[in-house]
Length: 207
Image (cartoon, rainbow, N blue to C red; front, top):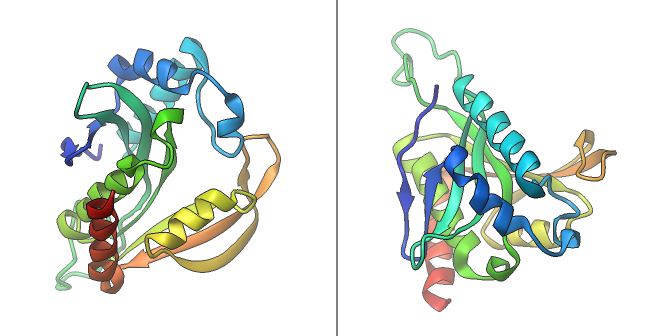
């Protein structure tokens, strides 16, 4: 099982997701469902409970590290995000990276926010916290991000923070509207992280 500490910024903290967050997730996702046409966001207590349990099963299998996104000001749950597709490469004996228990590469996704947090600094700070942990604590070599190719807002946000396009994966995953979606694929590699970090901090300072 991959574990992770609480990741804390100036505005939000990312807490390891568990069942105590269910009510907060229900409140965060209530409202206009059209906000989440591209993302699998749980609606209601039953869906939120199933969402958390599925995330915890992936955590226990060692393939994901899920978080609740919580505001520092009042402790409210405003969404969720996670590391997943954690890759551990088969480095040969004698290689400096041989025997690592932490990932060599990962993906960030399953990210959604409540209406009031959309287009605020919350997502930018959450990405800074996660990317810092990935590149500086785990020392990963790459972080991948996918989004539905139709989700122009998400694609622009990924490009804005420095994600490099790797093209379109056709019929890649089940979409939120239950079709085989095309995914826009992006990545950030270790050599690019310093520039991405500076850009994220600049955005936050301007917020």
